[in-house]
Image 1 (cartoon, rainbow, N blue to C red):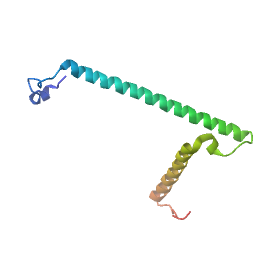
Image 2 (image 1 turned 60 degrees about the vertical axis):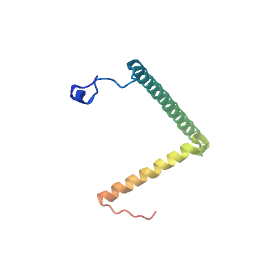
Image 3 (image 1 turned 135 degrees about the horizontal axis):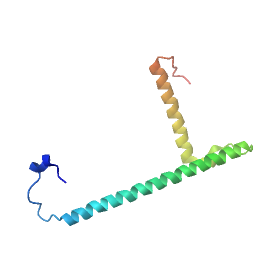
Image 4 (image 1 turned 45 degrees about the vertical axis):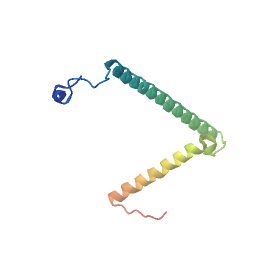
Amino acid sequence: MINKSDWNKVPVDPDEGFSADHNKQVIDGVIDHTDKMIKRKKTQHKDALQERSWAISQYLKGMEMGGESNMSKYFGKREMARLQGESVMNKMRAWEEKRKRGEGVSTKG
């Protein structure tokens, strides 16, 4: 619906070739496509989370039994790179917080 305050901006006659039915079909199609995309992305996220959880549990079980300590065998190169990047970001955030508090922060090592 058009808000009453916008009525003066809306032409009285629709554009030539305008079809309300086609317009509704396009809007319904976009909404349907968006709903499917959201559902697919949620499923992908859930699957990725389950996979990471499984890898972590297998790694910890292996460590508990004195097994392999090479994390890349459990997580793969891409996940290891993500974890390392996350670690670096956490260190940078901690350094920045210390700097803001005026604590002596060295830029060496």
